[in-house]
Structures are given as C-alpha cells and as structure tokens.
Length: 301
Image (tube, one colour):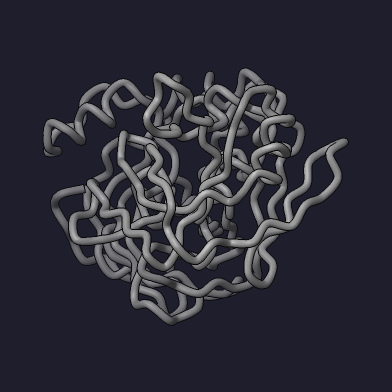
C-alpha cells in the first residue's frame, strides 16, 4: 500500500470492538472503547511469560502458537486490575502493579520493562499451561516503541496498535472453506461490516466515528486462527482456505524487513494506527474511507 488515491465515501459500520487484556488469552467484547497512545484502552496490557531459569535471563512471551490452552484463560478488567478464570480453576483477582520491577521479552524480541503480577497469578497460569509461567503487566512507567510504525508506542501486541477486520471478507472465506469459523479466530480489535469483501485491503486512510486510522499493511496470519477461541481446540481451517486464496508470494514496494514478514504468509485484516488519544469508538459508528491504494493481494476469484 504505497501509492494512494482518493476514493472516499461510506465503507460500512463498526459492528464489533474487541480487546484482549492478556496477550494470547480470551477476548473481551465491548460496546465502546477509548483510544490511547498504544491503541485501545486495556488491549494487550498484560503478557504471560515463561518463568526464567538459570539459563534464561528474561521471561519470554507465551502465545497460542504453541500453547493453545491460553485461549481458555478469561481475563475481565476490573478497577485496578483483572479477574482471571479458566475451566476447572475458579477465579482470582490480580492487582495491576504501579512500578516496573522486571524486564521480559515480548514478541519479535523486544525487551519490555514491566512488572511481575505476583505469585498467585503465576501459580494459576502455571497450572493451566502445565509449565512454570508468570504474568507480566505494563505500568505507567512502561514504554514499548514500535518497529513497524516508527514514533508510535504499543503494548504487548504483535506489532500494531489496532487490527481491523471485515465481516464481508470473513463470509467470503467461509464460503470457500471446508468448515465454518468465526471472526474471533483472527483476534482483531475493530470489526467492520460492509458489502464489499476485501475492500479493506485498499484503505490507506479512513475514519471510524471520531477516530482517524492509517492502514499500513495487510496482516500476515500464523497458526492462531486455527484455534477455537472458546475451547483451545485446533482445527484445519482457516489455514487451508487462506493458503489457497490469501497467500502472499511477493511483496513488492516494501522494505526488506517488511517483505520478510509478508512473503510466504497468508493475509487477513489490516494493521493500523489510530488517533487521536481520548476519543471513543462505539459499535454503530460509520466507517468512512478518505484515501485508498492498490492492494497487496488481488481478491479471491
């Protein structure tokens, strides 16, 4: 998405808002969300990490890619922290620390100064996962500069403040797939509904209600969308249909680093920045496109 045109106009409605308070754990669906410097308020502000041992200096990010049981861990924001539950495990309340006391490795190797959330959370997550794990939390002292969007910050998200997905594109995929799956498998933040599958691939600048978004790149998908986000069970789809219809072989016009991230992967959803801080997006907000560019992939035929 390097060249831009101007083909503005209504492009649908915001029909879903989702945050994931703990990276890799169950979603929380909202009617509205506040825009912050790192994305949507409360999104991916916590991260499950491995418990360091004698050979590991830092705890490393634990994700559903290798630990599908994370999908069964349900965090709910409460005043000052989280309530966390899991099947057969009951519920615990975890206070969010105020001061950094540790450093962990987030995805793509970023070292993030943050706080350990305590032994009770560690014991809970270790039992769910079957190996020693701890819970890290961002604090007001934490800061994680982004590599993909220079000059911007994010929490424990992969690499972008928000991910936008279109239900029309999902429907098009499901029609071609061997089994059904839902939009929640893609763990997007903002769900748009319109009548044009894959139109979001062309958006470079657009608004959702009072928020202004810049789309930087369609998003490469790993194995996580194959995991049922309620049960943690792994399925064959949407990997098969994505490989047939949304596979990126060549990403021309991108830097070598970006090409390495895009090429050889399937694509679904659009990684975006969102501004300004302090506005709120709400379900029902109109989506208006103000600039477009050529898509990385042609729509499925």
